[in-house]
Every structure is written in C-alpha cells, then in structure tokens.
Length: 300
Image (cartoon, rainbow, N blue to C red):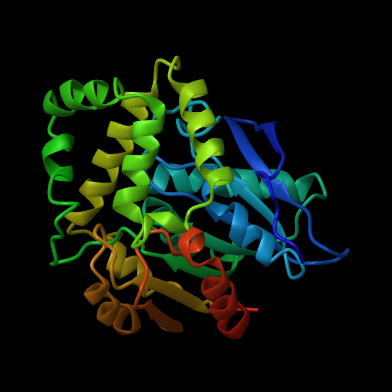
C-alpha cells in the first residue's frame, strides 16, 4: 500500500477521566486486529505516520498523544509517570473497545518513553496486550551516552524550570531540526513533509501553558523508575510480559545505547531483538520498512 503523504487524521476522544487525542490509520480491510502506538518524550502521534502506513494491510492503527503532548491535555490526576501514562493508554483502549472501534487485546508499540509506558501496560494489563514492540525503549541502563547524560540535570527541580522554557524560545524550525539531528543516524532521511508537519505542530503548541511542565513531569517520572528498588522496577516488570515481544535498537542511537539489547532476552520471557546498524533513536521513522518487516516476522 502507498504510504500516507500527510499525517493520519486526528480526533479528540472524551474518556471518563481524561481527554486523549489520537490519529487513526484505518485497516485496509474489515476484521483486522487493532494496533496502538505510543510516542516518546517530547514526541507525538506524528512519530508513527510511516510505520502505520506500512502496517495498514495488517492492523487497524491508532497513535495516541500522551497526556500533555501533541494535542492531549495533561491528565486530570497529574500523574505523568510511565505507570500514569500507561493508565491513560489502557483507558483509551477500553474506550475504543466499548465503542466497537477496536478489538482487544491489541498489538502495542512504544518508542523511547513510549516503550517504558508500553512495558508498564503489558506487565500490568496483559489482558489488553496481544504483542509488544519496543523501539529504543527508555529502560534503566548502565550505559550513559553523549546525548542523554544531561537529562538527570534537567530533571533537577529548579534547574529544569529554568532551562526548558529557555529552550522553547528557539524558533520552531530550529527545535524540530535539533530533534531530528539527535534522533536520526542520518537526518537527511526525514522527508520535507514530515518536517513541515512537525514544525506546524510545534508552532501551534507554543501557546499552551503546560508544555514545559508536561515534559519535566514525564522526564522525572521516567527517571524515578530507573532507581526504583521495588517489585515494579522496569526490568522486573519485563519478566511478567509473556506475550511475543520485539525490541528494536539502533546501533547509532545517541540516547539509548544498543548494548542494552543483551538484557532483553534475559528478562523478557518471549522476546526477539533486532539491532539496526545504520539507525538512530526513532527506527519507526528512519527505517519503517525494517521495523515493519521485523514485526511481520516475529509478531504478526
């Protein structure tokens, strides 16, 4: 099927305890299983456009905007930890199922922070997850990289509140290009269409009062899971995920070190690992064809 030339249509969904914005890539035929896609920190549902297009003949796809990102307002309970975001995704899936627009369990995809969120959901609500696909998941690692070592500094109360608003003063085009430069192995792989869509969304969100707060709350919630000594720490949760799991890393990822791949098969009971040699942090955007092929082989 020809890939979408523009982003998939977006709509707001009024759930019992929150509002979720999501983009829908209708399946190419009736009766297809449902797939749900979860973006990373600072991203949005736009990050899944091309992969959703490649999988359109196999799934009915929904890409969510996590609370405080994209066009979803912050959650009413204020919980932007991975577990809190996972509750939002779970409620969205149940909402779709109740309305006859989705079938559970779903094929669940997550990138970066979205991978941490997807892990929480798969471990805590196995009834909702049919397969799990993680792209450069933000999980605890002993490997610091050149581009993630500053994140704990930004998370420090007071420092983040000064630095993030200052970053938001950079023009939209500069922020989008900076993100592409740090997440792609080869920034020239992104199309002008995707750049234009991202810049338009950034400009439209600049007036929202919660942009900095949502980023910082989500970052701090994620980092707290890295030092959690309890039974719900991420790698312990991984042992509870019994569904087929695909984990994709990019060898040139400057944010999540691909050497973390060795831990996956030790903790996930039913996992396959793929390391793409010429890929950065967002394989679903940089190499959607490889991610789709791997999913078709191991999860479909």
